[in-house]
Amino acid sequence: MSWVWRFETEDGGAAAPSGSSLSDSSLSESFPTQSDAETWLGENWRELLAAGVQQVVLQEAGHKVYGPMSLRPVD
Image (cartoon, rainbow, N blue to C red; front, side):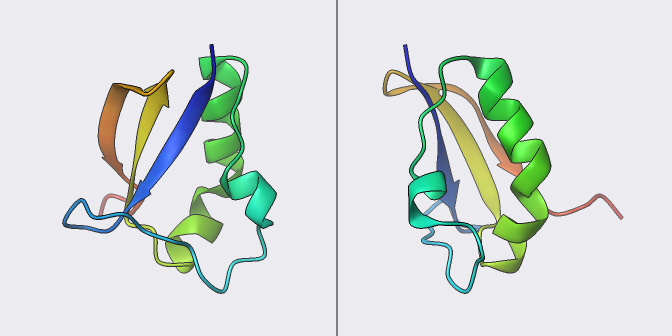
């Protein structure tokens, strides 16, 4: 199975991170486990938010696992 993040704008449209120091390959990376995917997001969410991603959806083999989950900190 492969686990991937879908990056979205606030209204649920597809977001393409721009101005990010994350490489294109890491943005399209698939992960072997849910834990690996969640660890990657935990390490990179600030960078994604700064690059224009507002929320993410975790998918496994093309099926939604959970989300959308906002990347903005709770006030």
